[in-house]
Image (tube, rainbow over all chains, first blue to last red; front, side):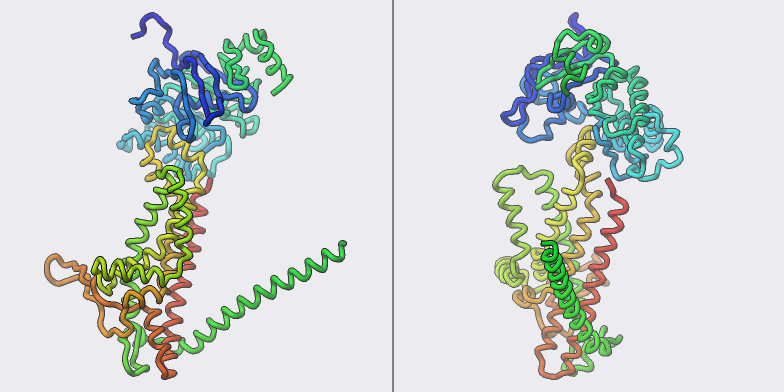
Length: 256
Length: 296
């Protein structure tokens, strides 16, 4: 099945994306390797979030959008007709810019995914909840208040809860759409440490407005500009020796 | 210029306070008059007697049982249908000219005079479907009347749910049905219950559509009991029984010449108004409780 080529977690081949008649992505071809952190950077409206949301088909929720080209998750084209969205989203989890816990207890927030996928055993659910909260470095803070309403948590805790909730369905890939942009520096640091922990087991793609954050947490960086992928490579190279002048102008703060 | 603004400010304030005072005072005067006239008449026998030719022996038993039965049917029909329609329009219906047209008309429907609903019900339920001048017909009619209220409040409650929640549910791999069942309906329960209670408290005071479909104004017996002594022990015969309701009973008493009957009408009015107020209070409590529980 491998037929000689590399296995990428996520891949796009000549992908074009349209919001109605407006083209948001132009001919993006990119391979995202497994168990690495890949950062997508670029100015607002450059298409990086749109690109991220291709991989769990969240763009489908917006009426009038169209994808042309191939988007591969584990070498499977996910825009084919027979793709099971439930299964896809179980493999490819997502964390959003604004923390969005359900107005339910902390426990029920994390338990929701596994329950929705049909796990009924109470012991198993409790085990998954604890494991996910530990992975999200939240367990010690909430283990005595699992029945408390999740919306009572602080912003940073809410965001880690959302990460735990995403991890509870055991994805391989975690898409993060500016996960720390609404958080204070300390909460941001916790999220960044968490990302570095998680990359041992997960493929992480993170959209960020903060170039320092991209430099700190990512192994690879992709620079998007006006719907095009300008440059993609190891983070160290992009930030020290970019080959495209527009990349250089952006990371040195000439525009943005 | 500054002085002019101050004068306008003062004038407008005076006008607002005057308007407010007049409307509140009128309301309180009406309520006070009703209570002063009616309250002394309310006692146990008034609540448990059938109407009578003698004003001092007459009571509201058949009317209150009728109101209860009709409200039960109204709620049982309007709640599921209204919620389903609201959820469908918000979550499932494609956004095109047809649904837009339906949406506009649902809001318009809330403003249609209730007697028009009565005429429609007379033609459809009484004549076409031969349901008779029964509790069932009355319940169906009033449920049509309050459906727009239930649908509109359901949709408003659903729209108040942030899109972030929807995205989170989908991103976890949940299906649309799971989204609706586990999130949309639970989180909008507060708004939906408020709409249901407000709708029912409107329906409970409706007279015109029920008179149109032929509700009786004098009735000295109760509908059949829903529980029977022989198998299968429950009976739905009561649905087909004739009925009267509190506002019709009031109407009947008011239209008589004797002042004693007018006192009866006031007493029934006090009871009807108390029920309406308690229901509205209930709506407020439900709303506050859910606002505390469901925050974003």
